[in-house]
Length: 636
Ligand code: COA
Ligand code: AMP
Image (cartoon, rainbow, N blue to C red; front, top):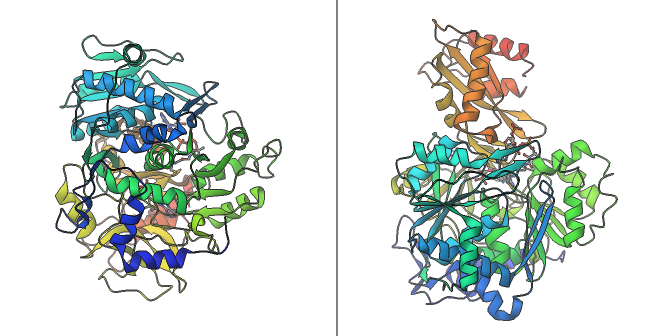
């Protein structure tokens, strides 16, 4: 890694000729048909990349490397401290696993364009499932294991999968989570029933299979391995969807972010070298989950498309078994770059501030530590840098973009780090800061962060089955620009600082959650008349949700009972991942005269920030009441 950066030159090359820039990068990949236009501005909401081209993402991530002589290289390393399992799959072995599963999907009639939903823990079979779907030109939708049946059902209904691939259980450090009852309940709840479910039986807890619907994963893939079933990669349009990944929106209905095939592989391939400084052969580890976009881009597709080795880690930064797990993995597999969420580092720091758990390990292979998913607080970055003595690089992106909007592209030579900043715009992104009317804000001023259209390859072209929502949520507020819904500033050197969301999304342990979705659950409680959920600052998880409920005058149960039931309800309806544990009864909620709940002001009180009483407030006394209730609960 060099400290002389080519960033400016590369960014300028892109600015001068965006299409030429991406066409050059696209030549690194294999296409079954070349594009008619690098960028066709006439297609869809803001144009499409590599229009007319055909390709297959699984071919580029797997077969291409086998054909190029990389077959014996490790492709996926599975390391699971929670089950005591370690297993390495070479590219040839991944191909065989993927082909067998693709054959099983074909048996169920899955063809190009069909949806395959994947609800799995962090096991290699989850990656095989994604690749098998991609191989057939089908569209996968991975649902994070921490979501409850109801959330799963919403996703099943939206994408209508022909087949669901799941597992008997997931393993959290403190318990085994039976996935199958959740899956069965979700299918029961949903209108769009899948034709079949392929279930991976895990020895930690097996499950009953339902006749005529459920198929044993191992049995069926073994049949195809024995038969030597050959499943060629199906060529799809570069603009065809590779996957749909649901993420939180402002309402309880999640947004199905669509990723295409062509632009996605070009952007990820570029990012692996330029942003992460990874060469084929090297080991890249994104300590995330395949249920999130980081897992899609940088556990599965990015490293494999690049021909590198990726790690699937089934464990936590602490407690599996201790705060040295990350460092053990770095030593054992000679990891060159690690990508994790700041919250994971804060968890390690909390247990091992002095680095005693790091000491036994040789982590000299590690060149860079990348952070994303939430704002990286300067204390944590500084602590990690002091501990590891390597650059700790924050970068900013979203499920919608699929790769970094802003970063410090160490593969082009590292730029100076400014603590608290994810550094500068990546090629492909023209980032501007504007006020609510769309007027540019001078350097250093706070405002909405927007990106000039078109978005670069790899970013979402639309939302699944929701073109209109795509336009209204992202393109309408600032015509000609993509609204990121993040707010912050850009200094005179072009360094960005991402400070807050402009919508009701909160970030809990690097997980993106909608407070609106939680409010929908709370008001469904028979004794709750209205409510507000806010994210309050938390030292470990960044933010934690806190619900304020107003009870109906004739409520029968005690407020304490109702609060407990509300906590349970959010866990049942959304899932444990919501980490909703704080629920407080209040007599009334502070509102503007037009009836808008003053969530921002409540958050300021909870976070002990200075705030001005909004001029439009209906009754300022309510703020005093809320402050007193929060104090009594140790909040604020
Ligand atoms: N399946 C089922 N349940 C799950 C789950 C899964 N895949 N993942 C998490 N959960 C559950 C947890 O068991 C926990 O339940 P609990 O309330 O009964 O304890 C709850 O969801 C919250 O989980 P989590 O956010 O992981 O909190 P934690 O306290 O168990 O661990 C951290 C805290 C900081 C160690 C952990 O959040 C972490 O490693 N975060 C990194 C996040 C990350 O990588 N994000 C991706 C963006 S890069
Ligand atoms: P997700 O779509 O789950 O990846 O979440 C995206 C959101 O997480 C962004 O819109 C930001 O609010 C936040 N986020 C992600 N990375 C960063 C970062 N490096 N700095 C600040 N916020 C971040």
